[in-house]
Image: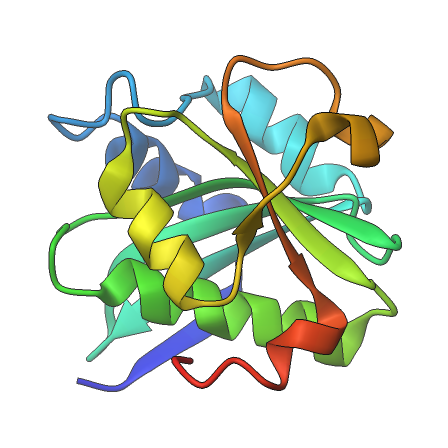
Length: 158
């Protein structure tokens, strides 16, 4: 199954919202109403990506602080968990970030109880970091994970 990513448009919002609301996503990821997605999609500091396999949407990624030095993976959700689609989807989005922007690092928040996501992010080269080292990450009960551009090219597990 070949996975491709495309920049999302307003036409993708129903898929994005339906994926956010799939059973099992409560407590793991956030969800927005249509108007929130419309505002975020229209904001040039954000980038939405939808992953497709064989022409079918399989997941999406919301990126914030697009083209800034520290880029945030705000949300990543796949429609069918446990098939490593999320890891491949995120890998392709990170590749887009590092080839299309001057970002020096990508960061994300992950809940302590979401061990599956932590393992997937670690396999891509993300490492747990102290929030004090990254003031833009703010205060959060979630764990902070960071991937440096310098580490991306050397990640043998991509």
